[in-house]
Image 1 (cartoon, rainbow, N blue to C red):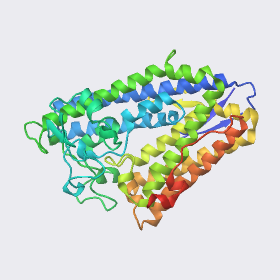
Image 2: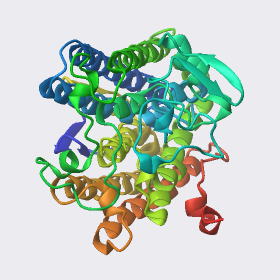
Image 3: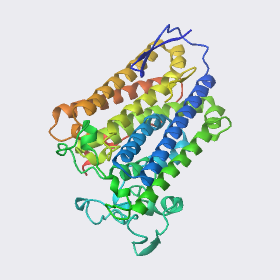
Image 4: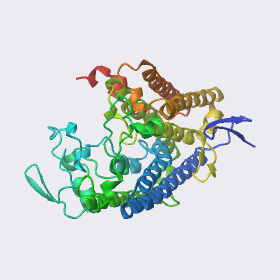
Length: 432
């Protein structure tokens, strides 16, 4: 019988570590699919809580309803970020992910922006079209009817318009911008007079009156409320679709279970690509190299430390075959760890150690963000101590990826192509 020791509910070490030579790839993949389903179900349930909070904000705008909507958004990010371990190896997830988590975005597409944002962009004709303020858009010589803010307008007309990935009209980050507004604090100190945690003092500060049609700030409060509600409803619908994909008979579940070798390749491609190219590279190292808060993942809310942290938790869920749901219950079963331990106990021990070391580095970053300074301040030029905390996370993720590669070899899975990043593989290209 396996006995589990939980460290702060997250770091998982196991006693009684006899080799599990009897664990089959098929059983491991069943656990993998079960955890995916549970995580997406939790992402959906927390998105529905966000949906209700958004409806309350629009119906009864106040400082309290704005705070409740923001908290609901932050809570919704916890399970969703854990699902990102299912990206890269599962095409059905990759084809869908851009609807719900595309970033970074040119927020002038959606709403008003500060003058410092500029008035145009050579790279994006939609840079400042401000759909909330304009019922008729003129873009690149063509007219776009934006009179009705609905799912068709956001998804079919605006989202990734002109093939530009910065034109993000839907998903968590569009909603985040509509709740917090721009974060104009850069890497500098928090504005005077704001209270709370470093995150609360330093993030964007959109007033609730941006949704108050009787005492409207920012203009077009009715359309802003429509946009926020439509975008949130779309997020719920998109998550419902992904939940269905991982249920019994769902396409994603069937795909990973129909071929055991291909399923394991999908698992390890997701782990290695998120660990290395996406998280260590594009989401962390790039911003640190450039000292640029625009490269933060959750930039409007200054929630980036949590986004990174729960990505790591999600990778641990996959490897260890256990997920703690938002209601405190657990989904667990035969794991990739069990399978590796049956082949090479020392390698499994190494992999677990690398995961724990990365979690520890992530927790140090998270604690600093919650007690000392925000993530964007950590990556500021000249902040040697903050930079070092972030670099430690990168180093741990890279080491973790090297162990993932050794797992691929131990399981005789052939050559797996992992996502890379110029920030790690060719740093000089970043500045060209």
